[in-house]
Length: 230
Image (tube, rainbow, N blue to C red; front, top):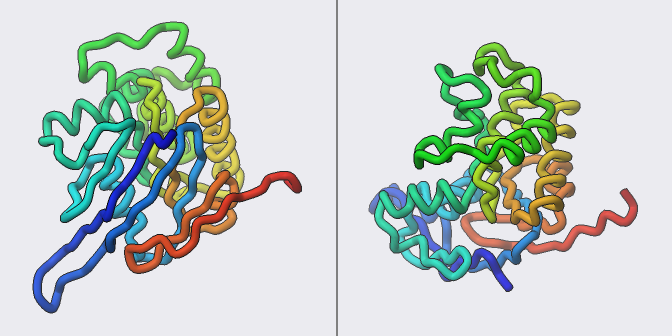
C-alpha cells in the first residue's frame, strides 16, 4: 500500500515570459518503508517537490496524499499540525534554534504541542545518534556532523511515518556523510519509516533502495537499486 501519492502535481512560479514550470504534472507512488532518493540537476524541481511533500509549499495544481489524507487542501494551521506529527524534515542547513541546547532542539516538535517526549524513546534516539555527551551543548558548540545528527533527532522524535531529507550530506565531509547515511538507513529499518532523500550526488543517491531522476519537473527515470554487491 502506498504511503505517499501525488497526482498530476504542478508548480508554476512567475507569470508571462518569466513563468517557470518547476513541477510538470508529476505523479508518483511511494510505499511504506521505502528508502527513496531523488536526484537531478540544479533547477530540476527536486527541492520544489520536497517542499510540496512536506506541506511547506502548495502546488499550483494536483493532489498530494499521505496515508490517504489530501494534504494539498489543508490550510496553514492544519498543515503545520499534520507536518509536526507525521513528517520529519531534515534540512541541509540544519535549521537548529541557536538559543536552545541539543536536548530542546531535538524535543522541539513535541514541546510546540505541549507534549513531553517519552524518556525511554528519547534516550534510545540519543544513543543511536551518539549525542549522549552533547545534550547541554548549543548548536554553535557542535561540529557540522553533530548538528546534522541533532536535526535527524528532531525529525525522529515524533516517530513520523515519513522523513524528508533535503541534501542531508551536502555540507559534510565524506566521513560524516557516511555516518548520516547509516543513521538514515538504521531509522528506515528500525522504525519502518519511509525516507525520501533529495541529493545532487549520485553516489549518495545509490545508498537508497530506489532512485528517481527528475529533469524539468518530470520523473524521467525510476530505478530499484540492488545492494547485493555491497
